[in-house]
Every structure is written in C-alpha cells, then in structure tokens.
Image (cartoon, rainbow, N blue to C red; front, side, top):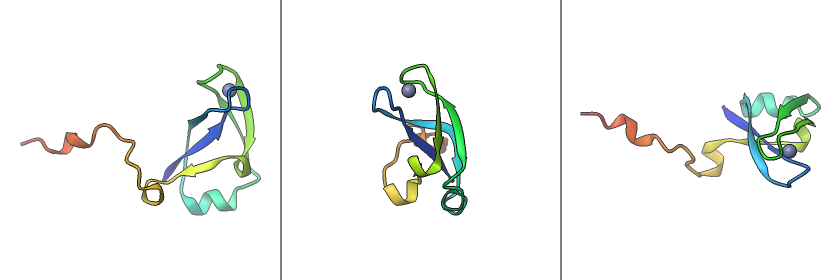
Length: 74
Ligand SMILES: [Zn+2]
C-alpha cells in the first residue's frame, strides 16, 4: 500500500492525499476521479489517478516515516 501523491495545480507542490492504494488497484483505476482537500493552498482539487502518482515505499527506497525507532523498546 502507498499513499496517493497529488500535485497542487495552484502551488505546484506535491502532497500526500488521505487515499491509500496498492499498485495493482492504482494502475487499474487510472481514470478514477478523486477529490482532495489540499493542505498546500487550502482548496479542493479533483484529479484522476492518471494525474497522480503512488508513493510506494519499496520502489522509492525513501523512508519517510519518522517513527521507525518505535520498535526498539526493550
Ligand atoms: Zn492546492
């Protein structure tokens, strides 16, 4: 599962929407329309998944979770 990353057309900044999807569902739903409240400009944008991208951690290789130390509790 990964977060759907949308690009704010007003500010040009990317942000993670509240939607999460796995890769297979994503590529099958490219014409699906989603509306999202934008934290960058405060507006609401409607996108198709074709305009979005999927933030799949195992592909990006980027760890964006700040709480990975939580497991070392001894
Ligand atoms: Zn926006």
